[in-house]
Length: 154
Image (cartoon, rainbow, N blue to C red; front, side, top):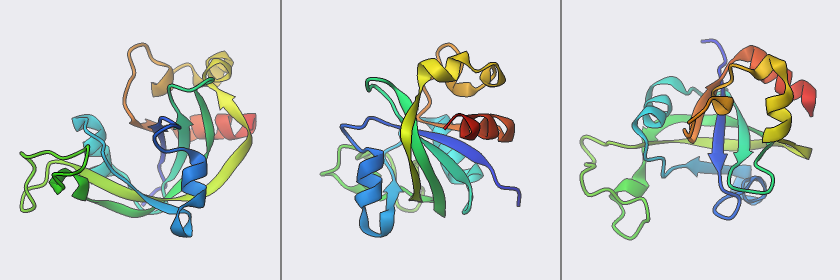
């Protein structure tokens, strides 16, 4: 299977690239996603070995701050079944889960974040999902050419 590329958004006050770097084995479960399109990516499209840009949203500046890699493909998001979790969903059932998660591992933290402003200046990224008006998905695809263009910016 061909490697795919993704961008995962997280607010740094909730979970940052530094938190991922400090996690046990530099690995974490990427859970709590509650958007159906993003869920479909997590459950059906994202595979082990895929690479991820880690993006800090709602930060100053919003920016790509590093790279992670998928180490476990989609599986039921257990936070949906935990009534004490902020991500609890009483409609999701163990025998028919609504929400999915993947496990990711820290690969690299960029010395200098690549800001949203800088991404918008790069003509090679004009069609990138992140840069489209109204794009709010927390998990989104990145083309191979976009991936290469962004890596060249670091």
